[in-house]
Length: 204
Image (cartoon, rainbow, N blue to C red; front, top):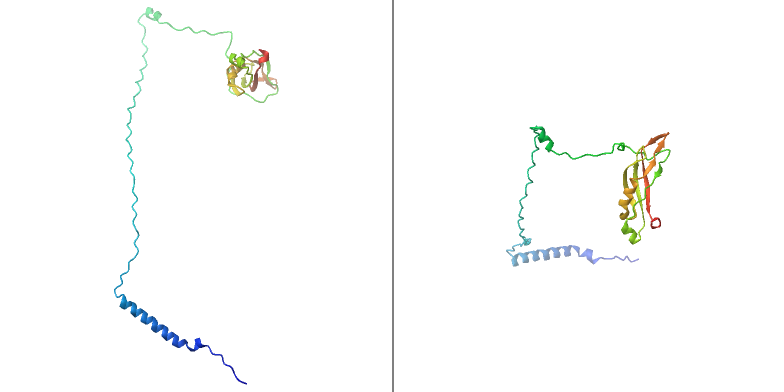
């Protein structure tokens, strides 16, 4: 039986190929040195970009002189009158007040919760604005009322209004309302309530 041997030409010629490659490389390097004996490298330099700066002229603001307020006059010192005649020449304004109508009591706190609600006993009619009559306007104003222990409205404030033209007449009418005061445990208490005032043309 004949034995077949497979041969690889690359493996057989490997030593020769290595020697030839080294020789060619050496010749190439020597040729470079002979052709370029003095090579000077030129490194890359960054270019300096100059951006122009635009200067704006800002006008100087003129500061106006602030005028000082006039000096406060000094209070006059009381000087005793030299005679009774000089005292009589000084007039004093008249002060009038109604003794029969005492001022409403001052209340610091108004309740929103009560056992018995205040009852309206007097309801003056609100003045209907003439311009609203001519324009045919109707409205409704909700007024917050502070009612004291005697049933008198001591303060009124607009909460909501359909038209501002009715606000002032509603406030004037609200302050004239009179109530039987609210009660809690049989005692009158000051309360804060919201009262509607309606303006309708049918009642005019």
